[in-house]
Image (cartoon, rainbow, N blue to C red; front, side, top):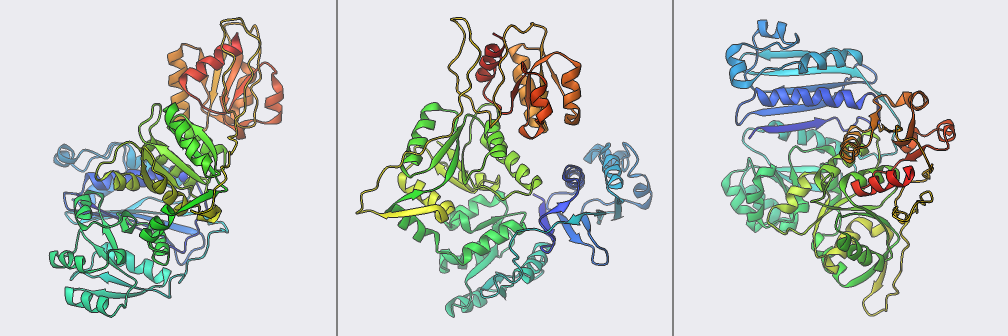
Length: 543
């Protein structure tokens, strides 16, 4: 129960030149320490701002109102394994090597990790580093919503979140009418002044929460912690009108865009009355073969090209190497579940500065609170199995309306059978008992097959993403094959030349012309599959 607030200067380009991995590790470490030393009911603020008197410099700050530090403690805090004092360490734990490494990372990027602190008042860690802004194709949202008026509940003593929202609203441009009482809210509503009303239900007085029942539900925008699901369910409000903390620029942008769109219920009712064809490409991630076929058939009936992944890791790999308009993601799967796969995909899109592909959760569970839990994890929508046509059409129209061809109910819809793109890998000639009819997707790189290779040959794993490397290592180790992992992918060609490898698991963008021609007996695999498929492929290659 610690409030976490986030503010990022909206004028910062969404594309910056820098080291996202180091920055992420530093910020995570600072936030972890802030949580560790902040008591129940405390507050932590993360700010990312431009330095006004300097070109291309960004300042990162992590503030807390925790136990703070004395001057003497501050002078020792960046020493390895430094602790505030014995009693503090016993109660809260120490900072370990985290701050020392973070400080070194900041210095490597041309900055200095500094702090301001006062005993029993809190601590602020901050650093400024050069990050060159790159011209972005992202639309400019400066004053993009200047034609709408919002109502916002204002507490007697504004919170840090209130001040951040004010800054965001200054950027986006809507007129904001503040209300502190039920009477003021009623007056705004009776005169139809505001497009919607923004209320932080974690901070609002009870009489304000009671008065919400008199406001049209479609006009409410609720700000809440994920732990406030019970309150949200009592309000019986559409989850699309809920912003879960911490509030980010993207969340605000999405909710403001929806403010000027057709109400959700209208879209749902319309979707149920029409049959729609979509010129779209969708990835379905589902480990159950029967469910795969059912979902694929339904989507193909609506003209959609369907690709299938068997688990979260394979889904992540396919997202990296292919273009999709929408992702359906099962929640419970082997190797990597849907939640973890969603996190990896979101991190990948952020790191590579790619447009977000909407992710729709697929689950057999229909329990209260599931939908908001999935949305809080970064998913964009939720649909239960077995899938109902009306719900599916609502989801498709919500995310793929720009790719839709609508056919009215009284018109006979022609079924469009979209061909799923599958490449067949043909293994080398084998004995009767070998496996030869396995279909696997390997992007555009064919597997090169060799026969009669000596048994001492090894498998080389050269993957840029740590999680892929770990999963592959575990699978191949469990299968009992000899392997080696390569940490520095820049040395890939040298490593291949230095040892006797016959199979290479790697990334498509690491394959050069010289590498692909270096050994005709080397099988190059750029797609990660199930344990059984990996075993069958290795056995087929080695005969």
